[in-house]
Length: 157
Image (cartoon, rainbow, N blue to C red; front, side, top):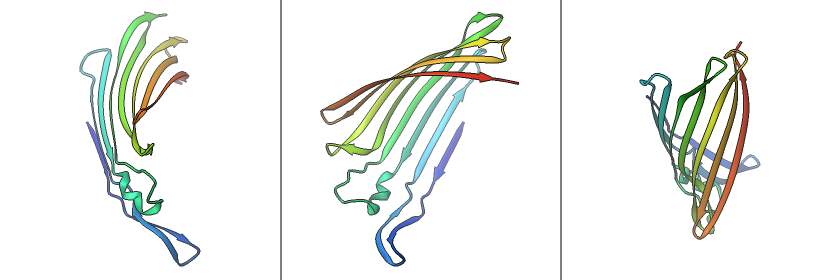
């Protein structure tokens, strides 16, 4: 288990030495995570975070849409079939979040799904990772979809 809290202090925007353009607070933040690895060859995690972005309103234009945001995610990794004597890693995840900015005066919301595989190379000291993620954003009647392909290589000495 893990948790974090940030209490924001004051921040001020100035022009030159004396003209104050705006006052605000650094956004307060709370987050917590729980992970479980009690099943051999598997690990699962859940995370929640909330950030109070509206604390920054005093620095921007009054017409700029700013929203508080939350972020929830769930993911896991399980051992897959063996390749060259080492287990592959099968990964999956889901995330739902609100973004602090707006579009068409509505808060932007995003959901994403991901899946990936880690393939052992070089007698288990090297892992080739491949992942695919799909994200879907909405704001009012507007929508946006995107795909991300991720490729990685990790080497343990």
